[in-house]
Image (cartoon, rainbow, N blue to C red; front, side, top):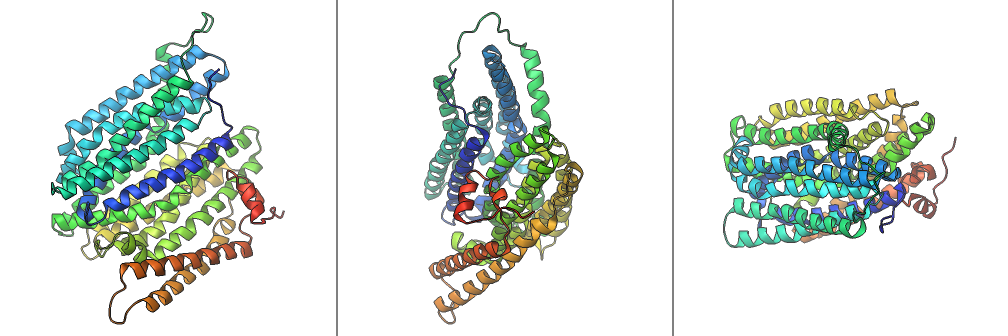
Length: 544
């Protein structure tokens, strides 16, 4: 018996929820200073974004699905009290992931120049090379994470992610600032910044290996405990992991193609000079950092909803599964919609305060991405519900459809000089709107009762309308009071007006949620510790 304690799925979901918020805040703190004009600026951030998109594609292809496959296999062997099977399964998975990660690391290292040229950003080559070891390191780390999760323990995964992000923040940001001050150029500064990802992954790997050695030491087993052959274990590992990896990598591939398409279309069709094109794409990357924030709050919800749906369907409680699905979509909508509206309404001060001095297109890009942010969050929830319902192949179909739309829209709009980079967020909105529509149709076919859009969208839309008007009005009034006649608003007064507007908007939204009774105690039960929060907010049970 291991010394590490197991947690039930709600406890594990709560741990991961808290960790996700911490990790994403650290990631936010990592990227925001990099985008400042004193470190990378718009052009340098473009090099960073291109290299990171290439890394994300290889990493998703190498790891997405395999930790899940390993955790399932480890959990099954552990439940059957087969320590020899557990040990051999881990060793086979570790070796397999080492081979996959090593191959992708070599591809990035040996072909960093051709990859950068192919993406239309020759200066990103150094960043791609600096990031290449991270693929192997994260692959090895994912084996340890899958093992611990299979033993019912989310703690090492949580702490490993915090270590990874913390080291990335300290090492990457420090190197970027030092190299920038030495005057080595934006390409070198971007490589230094992105090397923090490699350093963070190495730190997490060391922690995970030491944790397993201490808490899950290999123990002798009797001759009666005969593990399966390595070939059969590898076959099952690949059989479970590959379909999930393919589904997850499709969107990464689309984003990768989109990076090269945007840069190439800005230069070839829209006739921007290379430096102008990189500045425009860099500001798009900065806006993406902000527009990704709403999705950070949806991930913990999916961790709780997926096992709840799976349990209901296993027990043939299809009506209850349908209720949970509708509640989860409504909660996701209540979280995502106000954040998207906030980005849309306050795009100018939000972008200017955080990225002062960036390309003037930034606020307009962020405003359009605010629309896309809502669809991204609903896509995450829809995909999770389909996967929990045993329809893990259907999200692949919807993602491919959305990807085709995204590439087509970007090809036309980004190549138009008068629209240029503004076409990219329009393409993203169209892409995820198509995915949401396809997921909804698939859910209607899968579940006993189709989720009612009036409940999912209606109340949040009414509350967000009041919130948006409040944010727009308050910011306009306060900014005029703080501004001097005939001069543009400075950064500090703009920040003050923005925070006052956000505070007023949050208050109005909370009041509207209470008036419209958008949330119930049944909804809050899906969120870790949600029932306690529901009692504090005096929420009522759903009226039948």
